[in-house]
Image 1 (cartoon, rainbow, N blue to C red):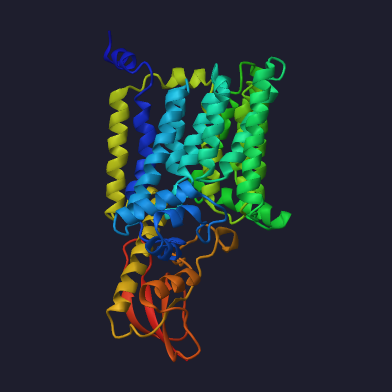
Image 2 (image 1 turned 180 degrees about the vertical axis):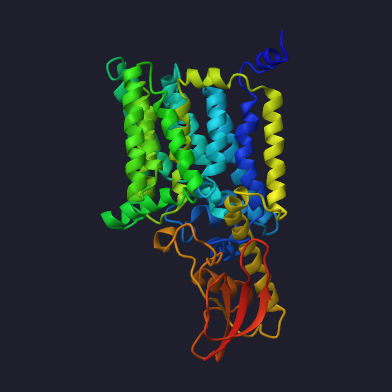
Length: 508
């Protein structure tokens, strides 16, 4: 028996690909961890420090759009039990996200294909997983875990016996984020459509009750409290486009999405004619969207849904199509809203991918471990500041974003221990939502939070709020390349990955 064959037999179930799956996410976590306060965590500090556990769980946190008690409980516990650190929440977000992908790996038959595709999606869609470094990331990773439960219940053999378990899971996941309820209803409708001619009355009733419970929960948690997001159709379309465009922040990522799309089409069922037609349509769609300047992710979603429908995975297809339009509900353009579609497209690529499984079978445990070690080592190299062609360009946005959070914390500490502590402090730029940014991929001058959140943070911590009319002077924090025609520089922070941050004194 050859060594190659021995390696293949020892890894007959494809466990070597767990190392590849974990490597992609670990790469970016090493680069980014730990962020300091970011975005709304500045406004949450007062709530977390002043309120007790029940207060945090029973009341909606500002500016959260709706009631998410379990997510808020995780945020309170990780913050308070760590003495006010945001790092434990980031570890929670990362561990739960990895657990979701590993669970999906365990239940999908085509593990090698899924593990390899997860390496790509986990490493390339890093902008969508930026939520891991935020306190509010506690809302999202559990929903990824819930998606795997939906796959097990509605796409695996005998899974429909556990509709009650899935319903309970939907309610629990909804207390992290109500998006889980929409995904659950889609999965139920898909399961009903697929099995409508073979369902017993009891099974039909269980699906109806499950959908009704989820719909009632949406009414109680979102609609009746008035937690719907206003917006025109044009605004929602813009939010949808920007969310997916924000995942393709580099031409190399768009190229990888195109490859994943074609790989999905080339494996869409046993009929050669169908695969040829779908691949041709996918290629045409990719070219058209590239010319129109639209995200290529849209084509991958469409091809994935088509493949799932051709293979009669109706529930998974319905869940994917629902997940793909979630960015229209809260049209901020956040790339985080694309993570659910990304996981489901990876599943779609993998199911029934027998040809790819055979092709990848030669990769054994030794290769998987070696690749993991190499990828992790490269992350530490990039974090140290060593320049690596292509990879440095991809990694710099995350490294810079982390460094800016540290810059603002350092500036606030300096401010309170300097002669300028009596002066109010503000930001020269605003941390706009991606949908409001001129260039969603250019974040060089974007501060870690916005002025309103910073005002409330400084008012809570040092009793200094928004600069008033009676203030003769103020401190202005300038990030990146933004120009400022007035003000005298009094403090400057250099940077390895971001641009320097400056503090100016402006007089009225």
